Image 1 (cartoon, helix red, strand yellow):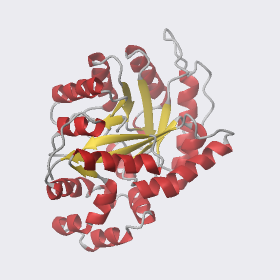
Image 2 (image 1 turned 90 degrees about the horizontal axis):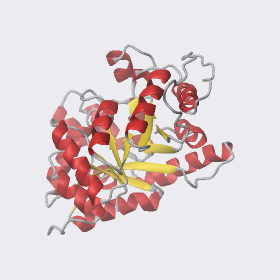
Image 3 (image 1 turned 45 degrees about the vertical axis):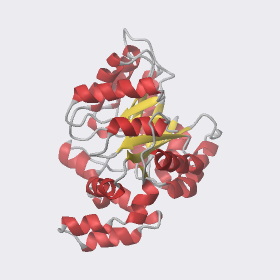
Image 4 (image 1 turned 90 degrees about the vertical axis):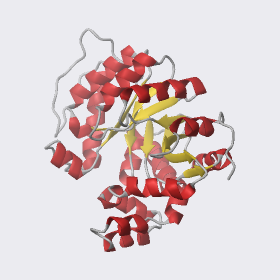
Length: 327
């Protein structure tokens, strides 16, 4: 069964809140919200917090370059207090088109900058003086709000170096577009190496893998929706490198060859790639897809209902509360 889920706001915040309430009632442990160009993720989590009582609330993820470490820590501490200690702060470096074109910032040394940023945030949340950084310098301390030293911080990671950092300094790792073979062959060994570097084990370290899923009897329609969603990711260097490491360099080559032809770019994303990545079909197929991630080492496979699919039915199927569809 899925342990978590990703619920975006889409076109309706009200509908998203109802879906989060449904996820809580079904027994999901966590809900994550992405941070793209729509509604602001930490504000959305505040709305989710006010509408629920037990489900954990996570950013999946908020880019570190969108706000200073002091602002991030202050916001996270406030939401954690408001939610009764239910926040998981997921941090990522994002990508240069987002960081530079949208926010006017720069990614110079992503792994070193993530290390520095997380150390400052963790110190502030713990009520300590923040360490002096090279990119971020602050003397901020929380006042009038109790420290939140237990607030878990996860890192979004794709590359071996960022995965090792996550293992060393974070409480968990958040994965997107990482299929089970990549989790087994790259993520788990690199995270373990990071844990060992810090004198720690994988015990109590959370591996959250987003699993694109759809309860449907029309697999091709779901694949079509996924291909459309994946078009921008196939153009981003961090994801391209990871996809090639997974053995799908031919998909990248086909995507590049079709540049400017959207239909050709979509066709370049193979059924083999989508079959490994997704959990699509009747309830048995959805749950089998999720279990592939768990078997590969993802302790918290978290479903992300595929666009244009029945979100509520997929949430029920992924946790075992939906009658099977006939294939």
